[in-house]
Length: 164
Image (cartoon, rainbow, N blue to C red):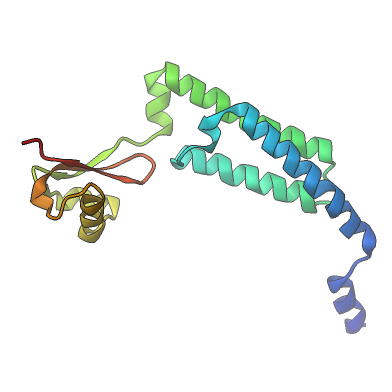
């Protein structure tokens, strides 16, 4: 009995494999088209909101490909709806500052006038080494050569050199 269960878990027949071979390329092509039509914003650097949408799209695509109980058209409708919701929310964020503040974090100042701000660094879980790396990327060798370093809403660090 246990050998039957084990073999069923390894191979459940060709119909499931054939379904995946048909559905996966169709769903993939449809997702690429939907993302291309939705614009560059959908594929931009990720903030928390964008990450949530990206994970939801990935999860939905996986369900479309692997779930026998989910029809391709239903899955594509779900994908289209997720991208449409992302488009509507980001369009509202462009037009209304309150929506923008709701879905995006504010940049955080981590260094000012060449001096680290330890409280901000600790709250944002950023190390001095990461700030030094941002300084090097800006062409600066020392932190005192910087006016400011910001942790941006997408998690990247921006280093601003002192103006002399």
